[in-house]
Image 1 (cartoon, helix red, strand yellow):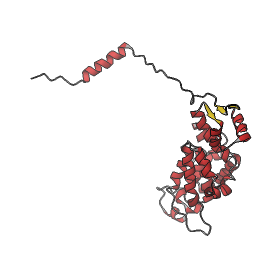
Image 2 (cartoon, rainbow, N blue to C red):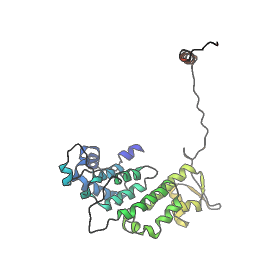
Image 3 (cartoon, helix red, strand yellow):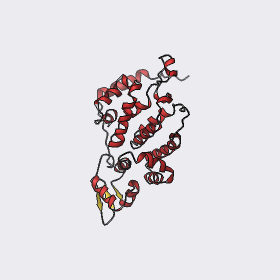
Image 4 (tube, rainbow, N blue to C red):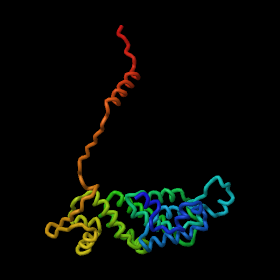
Length: 265
């Protein structure tokens, strides 16, 4: 899992070179990484390190060029390279990586970014960032029905109509977050409850359960989750073998370091 996170198998060689080498700080490469981000949006692929590199590009502004090179001027300090749509799409992709910390990594960079210069076009990020943060919190807390209620609400209409609709497989990626949580906590779960986690019902829910390879009992409405290391309760016996020679060394060391006994007066 860690290897796939740091170097996804779908990462092209050019992007691998940019992310792994010093070229990741070359401002002329920002357009390449942004194109790669939109490829991820269209293809259901995900590359956290490449997206973080976009948020960390050095500044090309006159202020940065006039300062000494001892201070690294990153993307979050550069209003010239700031693109709110790119930032929002990065956060949307990171949102579905829960419970991994990708979303918080992105937020930590945004917190250090100064306000962009005035523009004729309104910046959608200040309006959408609190909603994205709230959605992430609900996913992280495994409050899946509350997540879907907020996501379907009018408050998130702008995010749905202009961003997540363009992100291929976004809702299925959210469902995968719920599936990971269910697999870790349940051996069986009611189909109605599972449906609230996945925002599915009826034939759509049945088809999704079959796709997962789980079993739905039509009589009881209970979905059986296959056993895995996380949902199996097994006692673990830890046995340690200590040789007598090792024990005598411990006793001898304790005797040497013990405090001297003060005779009674």
